[in-house]
Amino acid sequence: MHGFRVEFRTSLLASAIAALGACGPAAPPQAQRPPPEVGVVEMQPKPFELSTELPGRTAAYRVAEVRPQVSGIVQKRLFEEGSTVTAGQALYQIDPAPYRATAQRAAAELKRAQATAEVARLKAERFAPLARSGAVAKQDNDDVQAGYQQALANVEAARAALETARIDVQYTLVQAPIAGVISESYITEGALVTAGQPQRLAQVTQLDPIYVDIQRPTSDLLLLRREFEAGRLERAGPDTAKIELVQEDGGVYPQPGELKFSGVTVDEGTGSVNLRAVYPNPDHHLLPGMYVRGRLREGIEPAALLVPQRAVTRDAEGHASVLVVGADNTLQVRLIETRRAAGDAWLVGKGLAVGDRVVVRGPLRLMPGMPVTAVPADAPPAAPGAPGAPSAPPAPGATPPAAPKGAGHG
Image (tube, rainbow, N blue to C red; front, side):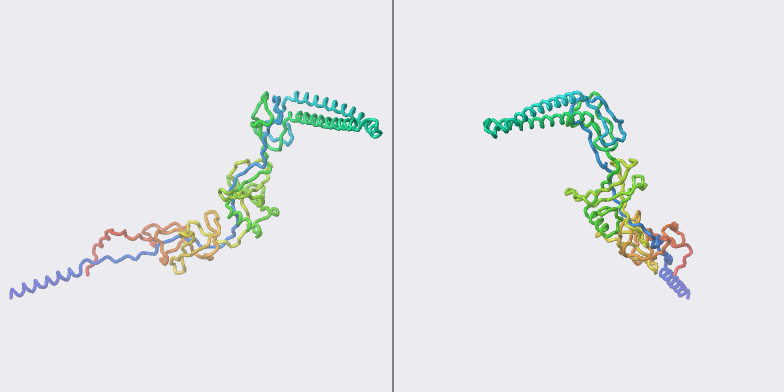
């Protein structure tokens, strides 16, 4: 009987141990992760001014280098450096004495030639009737008549020499070839200058009006021409469009300009064209070499949809797409057409509608079909661990968290 009790207790203990082994420690309950939070921008129509900005640089309307046309000693400088001069204004005085003497000599030569021609005329008038009557030989008359014509030619040559001498006298007063702002003087009084010398005396730059040169690809030129011919650009003339000027500091130049489509040539090396715009510049606020942007206005689109550029991704072929939160709060991929940049956004042509919620921020590895919690993009993201905040999945190979104390065993 005693042996039976021991055997029964041993069997009962083994059964209990086996039951405990089969039950084992209970697995912790899997926490339900909330959908990740994403910041969205709701598409709403708004008026948008359609415009195209073309970068360029200012260039002087005309530039003239002042050089002497006669040789001599510079006696005076007759202008203030950096001032505005008018066309024909005297700039330098070259010693005129040698040229005045040459003009006087040429005037005397002209008088001598005229006197000789008068004698030849009288002789030719006497010989003509004598030759007709046979009193003198025909050859003698021909010689006299030819001598008279030669004397007349000498008069014309002397007159031309006198005119040349007078022009040289005028050239001793060096004048401004155009109106504009004159540079510093590159020579001083007392310097010897020569006609046609390579060194310039000064330079005159016309700043009113002023050019803006715009280098663009030929494709841009064709697009601008099509928009101009379609009437989408404001016209300033038969082949010119109105264009605003945005200065380096971002301010808009108060004077409107004209973009010319005529006289455009293509650079064979780069395949680009040089478009030229003209702006009034009466106060000389624009100077050559400044970086500016020309703005072509095309009108206002009353119901434009703008999507932030950071929300747009492109594939290898350049197709644009965005993530949109659907009505069931799941992510959808939407292909869109971007028409042009508008600051930090894209103007959307196709693919989005009013009320679409476009994702602009969120966790990594967002996939189409994933449920999400959409919040306004300007709302601060929820803190980790807060209700509704996305919880990061455990890293591969990480040790699972220990079961809480007191967990039951099956």
